[in-house]
Amino acid sequence: MNENFTPLAVQPDPDANITDLLVERAAKTPDGALFSLPAADGSWTDVTAAEFQKQVIALAKGFIAAGVKPGEKIGFMCKVRYEWTLVDFAIAYAGAIIVPVYETSSPSQIQYILTDSGATGIIVESAEHFTRFDEVRGDVPQVEKVWQMHLGDLEKIAASGGDVTDAELEKRRTTAKGTDMATLIYTSGSTGVPKGCILTHSNFVDLSRNAAVAMDEVVNTPGASTLLFITTAHVFARFISILSIHAGVRVGHQSDTKKLVESLGSFKPTFLLAVPRVFEKVYNSAEQKAIAGGKGNIFHKAVETAIEHSKALDAGKVPLGLKIKFALFDKLVYGKLRAVMGGNVKYAVSGGAPLGPRLGHFYRSLDVKILEGYGLTETSAPATVNRADKFKIGTVGPALPGNGIKIAADGEVLVKGIAVFAGYWKNEQATKDTFDGEWFKTGDIGQLDDDGYLKITGRKKEIIVTSAGKNVSPALLEDPIRSNPIIGQVVVVGDQRPFISALVTLDPEMLPQWLTSNGESATMSLDEAATNPKVIAEVQKAVDAANSRVSRAESIRKFTILATEFTEGSGHLTPKMSIKRDPILRDFAAQIEAMYEQPATKGESLVH
Image (cartoon, rainbow, N blue to C red; front, top):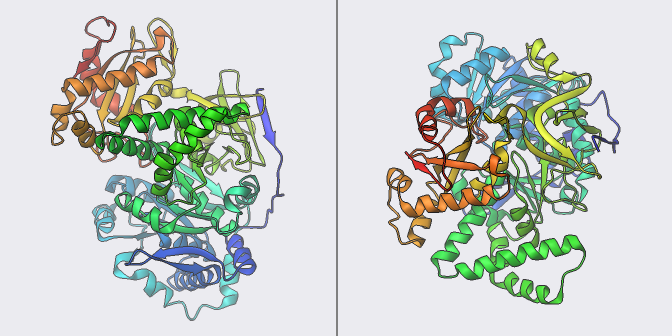
């Protein structure tokens, strides 16, 4: 199959905008909890749909009183928290447009987004955010309105709109139609200068309404709830927050990942939104704790049993002996892992990178179905997602209703439908280049199976061609290697080279526990760890496992362990933690060159 379209479940409404989703929700279940706010004692206080709408209205009137005009763009720099969605809807009620700025953005990135978008105002969450903005304030003279949340500016705005009438607010709220811009979100810049993606109200409204039908068991079950910890500046969490208002899902927030386990335990969500790295960390942490406690063998047997059990479910029959083993490990291991995630999680929506079949099967036997999906900023987040009643591990599911997937002759994944954006801001040529008729060219390589389920196999721009002419997709090697507990990031190299090599960084969070379990000092520095024989052997083991999945010509022949981290601050990761290949290839050119000074021999590795 080379093309598949999923029919609409809910017909488009060209007159609707995202504020209508809140109006409908508040009318349908005014007393239903839409959010929960954390209290100092670890409990959560609910905010009903009616109360949230009331707060949105007050803040929107305040923005109008402060001079915010219809169509005006307002920058917003804030971590994931309740106020993000509050401001998002209040600005929309006022008829204006939010331009998200990642809370980790540098002054120059802030300047670029504010200048390119033409934003005339900005809301910052903290004093530290304001300091970064203030550094470039003189370079963005059009930004006249500046609000600081830490100084209580949101409360002041909400208290200042008493003279704005309900009629004026309703006029503002209903001005925008489906084809109008709802937000301007800038790409993370992993392959160059960030581009502003024009996402319309119809993108969010029609996609939310149709996705809610496709994900009925996830978002429409009584008591459905989720704890957001991925930044709402990114379209993935932003879409889920809007979908949750439409579906009446109770949402909590936790921006501090160090407190995530504690918050999961008290909030007890029914589904999660995460990138694969989160599931890898949960697994790796549990594995290392088991090893440190002398229960490593039990844990590994439990893992293999879980995977075998999941595969047996796919086959349609679980043998009696396997059932008995599974029940035993459910009490010893699986139940404890479920408790780490709060005890009530039944589903998780995963995107951003492939999870890997092994972890997919493992979590499935924990009674946590990880529904992998696929999308980009340009597709308003999800274009495809696995279904709760029929999901295929190793795929990212079929197209959501109202969307189509097509595989081009060169393997590129094309998308059309209600999710696809309206184009790039002030960049007609880039918009023209990225469309083939009505089909958006994603830049990813993939395959469709007979049921229309999509599998992503690589990134078109990242395909490596060796000097022997062999095409290699880095993701096929990088994703399984990165799942090793001590490995932070992996960058496969080898374009126009005689063989494939890799740069590897270590995970400073997981490394100390692993070192202790392997009889080494937990205080070892990254410099020392990078040359430690046991660490090198562990990395080699991960590389060998990845190599077993590909041909000899595609396998990694050498690797270099770097005594440093790739971070957003170093310029090597995007805000969503994707690697920036070009800066990495440039900054570590000497280390890459060293791997090619001598021919490769089997199992050879270099360490720098």
